[in-house]
Length: 86
Image (tube, rainbow, N blue to C red; front, top):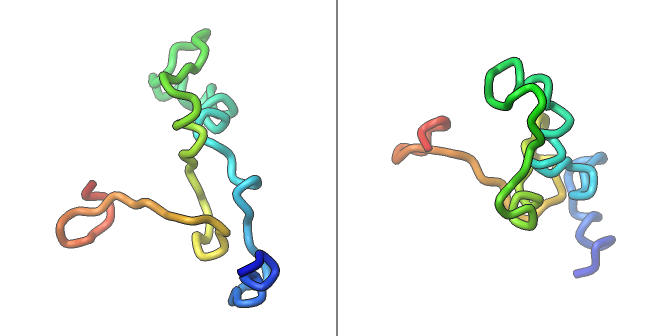
C-alpha cells in the first residue's frame, strides 16, 4: 500500500511524521539545564551515549499518540497491564 493510500485511511486530519519527533539524545541535549537541576547530569558535562545508533531510535512523546505516524509505541506496564508498572 502506498503512503498516500495508507494516509487516506487515517481517521485524523493531522498526523505527526517520524522526522518531526525528536530522538532521545537530542531531547537530552536540548533539556540539559533541566537534567542538571534535577541532579541527573553535571553542570558542565556533555551528554554521551554508548550506542548513538540505537538511542536515536528512542523518543519521548508528549501529546496525542493516535496522531503519530510510526510503527510501534512502547509503554511500561505491569502484569495487569496498568501503566507505570514496567
